[in-house]
Image (cartoon, rainbow, N blue to C red; front, side, top):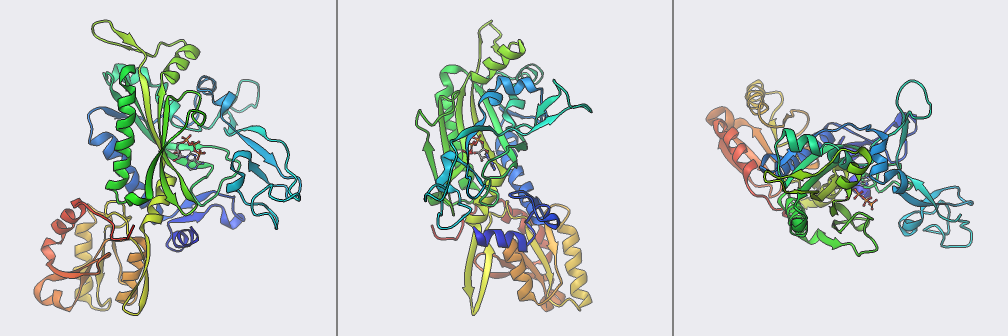
Length: 445
Ligand code: ATP
């Protein structure tokens, strides 16, 4: 994890937030490549969930909703974690995750391991961030930053049903920020207080919910494989009945083998009719499906939910590689080409050669209209390749001496390091084709 954190910072993917003020624990800002990476992951999710399907529509609901939403959903009453304070080191921990927490003092590694740790009894701590709406802080102005995007979807069920003219099975998907006042954030982006969720609620006939639940576990697992995560690092873990949320009729975690061990990447839950029933009760608006021949029922809901942050950590970990080439060590991020922040680099071999620069710039101007590409003429060519390796750019096109005589360029492959020559006029279609190909990581399991 340390290597990932340091590379992310060094190459401008992720910075600790508010650094010039001493930082704000477990809060991060995304730099240029981090933003490009996030955009690609969101785009691939959006394609798989919406653009490639006929049965799911998009939504972008508000962050601050009517406070009654969170009463109906059960969050006001029950969205809490058990918290313990240590009277010795003055730190707070999640009582159910003591073994994952670090004690503030030696010799204990984890809190509570030695008598020196003086822990309080656990008490429930609500994870929702409170805020007030309007200029005066008074009774009735209290609201919450959403701790999940899902409720914004449920409260729009009727709108979508009527206006988008949908009938089950159909889904509503959205990407947006969620906020949780986590007691023990940490492990880089794995557990943060502000994160971007990608959730989809799939409404089905009650008797079909089990089938769709299994279907979505497979779909989501296959999405990770499609975008290059190694099969040996992914597994599905079904929750036991005592581990499931009160509303859940079945929950499975898609887990990834993070450096901290197997942990939840994405959750897929069969939420039954809990949400629509509760919002019907609290809002008095009937949230049900009425068919053309009068049949009516409250659809059951299958929910795949994940955060961009957990995907980013998994993809960085899976892509990170170090190897010795010739005498040199190189660090390379072996991202799937459609995930990599930059698809190709365009490099004039000699930055002082006007002809090379002009050819490289015109290739760059052509490619940048459609792809995320980067022009770089700064430093020795070997150093430029290594810079691109570190941000995971799958291909580099180099304009050299030979280009000036025969209008061909060298394309260098990030993973195999193979180089071949292409006519400069064919680069654009070559890159389009290369990006369309299936891709498998060369990293060993
Ligand atoms: P955990 O048990 O790890 O706290 P959870 O079961 O509460 O997670 P859900 O409520 O199911 O998580 O949230 C759905 C998804 O949102 C998770 O699978 C995870 O990808 C992501 N997620 C939840 N909390 C955080 C967080 N604090 N930071 C980053 N991502 C998160």
